[in-house]
Length: 471
Image 1: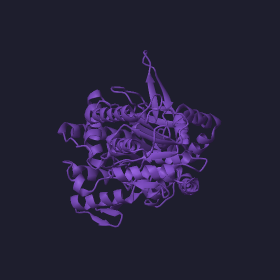
Image 2: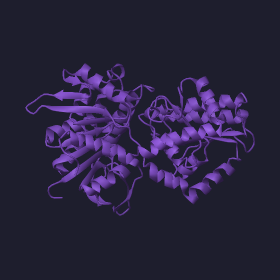
Image 3: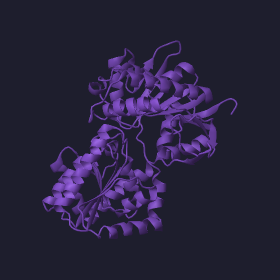
């Protein structure tokens, strides 16, 4: 496009998995994910480009096309990955924005790298966006991009979506560069958050750190051309209809039955599916379940917990310690109460394809989502979308964004081990009629409010702020 692209998505990663051969040639395969699914038709219809890191250090590639979308790679050195991504994004912002469950680290060289990389992303967008284009920036790794882009290209319509929680002032205030982050975000016209409380937290931080006028959801930015920034909740979802269809397939149904047979056909299969992350409450869940088994409330053989913990940030010390803690706890419980060929907990430290995950969801009677803090938690919605027989029970942490939407789940405070145990037992013993009533309510919500509806709501609001509908 000689005059640029009308719609530009900006995210830390490109929506493809790249493979570099020995001869230097590069092949790409579309990466799975709801964001790609939601934006692909919009980008194809509106001459879209996607700006992001290609997934390997020191890899410099020219822009290329994939599935009708222009992909614009932003190179990162090994040092920048260590400081900007592993450091500032995942060892400073991630724990800070998740209620300081783990202590964040504040290093000036990490912040310098974060600023430098955000500037590179902004420059890349400015170079490919058409005049008056819509730009949608995604997530905490790129919070400075909206402000930098506003300076470079004031003609653009800029939206930003924050996929993780946004902390209250009492926590956000710890960040030495707090004012710069707020200024960066205020470069957008529309700021989307998972929960109304996240948007409210952001607006309170604006009041504390600036002298800008805040009225309701709007922040007024003075200048030659006064403008307003809106901060609102747009809870993200999944491609629920596609997930429903996948769960109905003969292959998935057959695999689900096979999983139950392999587990010994227990009365109750409880399931946890998480990245191995300290925010997910895996330790709390395993502790509670171990106590239930030891107390005879969930006897081995009648019930089993399947815990899928996909590898995550394995070079970060907090994650290495978490893995050690979880695996020690699983081993201790199985050693104390398990029987030959019949463990209390099946622990799986793998990443599985979508078809296998769907089969696990179909096989499970009770889904345990016990996050200590989560922006949304799409696993909860995936489980609901997969329950095509309208049964199964979702045990859901109050501290997830999904808790605001999924009325019909069994809500828990994962810090309350006794309460968590009671909720697990309640879910396992819930009469089928009551479970179906709850699940039907959940499925209506998840199937109606899918990821396409989420993206349309955000982009329609962004365009309305500029006085015109999307093309």
